[in-house]
Figure 1 (cartoon, rainbow over the protein chains, first blue to last red):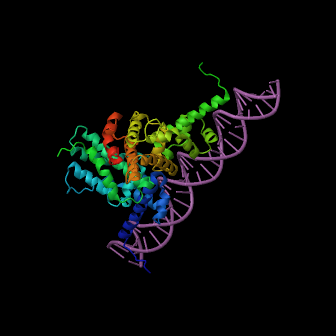
Figure 2 (cartoon, chains in turn red, orange, brown, purple):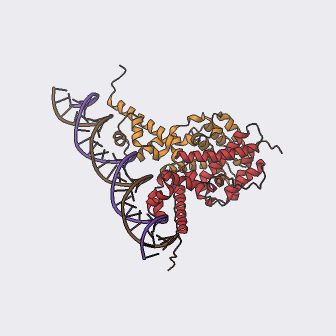
Figure 3 (cartoon, rainbow over the protein chains, first blue to last red):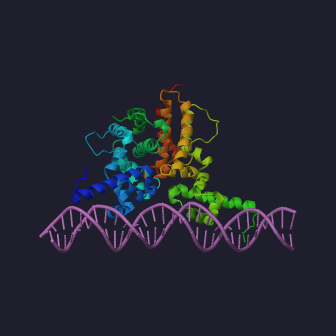
Length: 197
Length: 197
DNA sequence: TCGTTGAGTCAACATACGTTGAGCGAAAGG
DNA sequence: CCTTTCGCTCAACGTATGTTGACTCAACGA
């Protein structure tokens, strides 16, 4: 029937991908501790031992699940440097990634955030990502307490994301992202400090 | 030596208290999953079995650890109704409890917040507490999107608390609470909506 | 004084988990 | 065609955890 026979390399890549997807989904849903290797394997339709053989340990699987694209899109980096570096531009970018369809944040980011309060390595990752973003913001704020303000801005973003994606507060359910961005904009601008331009 | 002999009732109350304190501390530090009954018992200088005998299960111990005073002070309730119910007053109260010496938030609240992303019951508690606060705020905001604005305000508070108390971001370390409150005030006022008074 | 209560301990059970090593069967390669 | 490689499974081990039941001993009440 539809059962194609695949070359080994391709087959391997696909199962590895299935495992990673399943891992990301489960880590994002229940966090590091409650996401068991067995459950991930079952979801990927694979033997638990294979997960170990491919990724070495649960810890490494988690790291792989959270890597790269995950981390920065979570907090609004998006690595494209086409937009300006003014504070307003950065704030707008943050609001944008928040709004890029809120229910569809990359699973890797959600996985990291879900575990950041209870899993040490996830906490370290989160601090790194936030720190990098704070650095960026700090450069374009130029105020007295520039760094502190930048930190608070990121802190606000974390709060909204937590309330919306992870706690799933009823009050934020189904609200169009643009509206949240609209309501949040003045608050972030206020933290940007007295306008310099 | 100083080894006083205590009446049974008193003795029981004290050990029960020691267990609860140890539980709160550990739950707050590492979250529900990583806080083991054995570790809690060791910290309270008691046999693990005694913890079960007194509290029934780890789940019930957690609930007891998180109860009452814990929950509302976490997000700034403080149950005293002496202050007004105007939006500004409420915002000020929120900022106040945030600033009531940031490193000394009640352990029960921290325990709840630490686990709210990974432990279902903690999540439910958090949603309840936040929901109640949002209700309060909504009444005194009177705007179009009053409820949504109120939710975002609480969301901001959660973010700051998470960043400060749980993630322990370097940028917020050692910053006097009054300064954070000062920087945050305009942002919260902005969410309060166009001033009605 | 003596039986009863209850605080507290000890040893053990059942379970779930991460992890390992041996092995099977099909693709790869000459 | 035969050997090797490798994706993948099976069964098991070791360990940590929540939880339980039998037990000890001092405080209590009559």
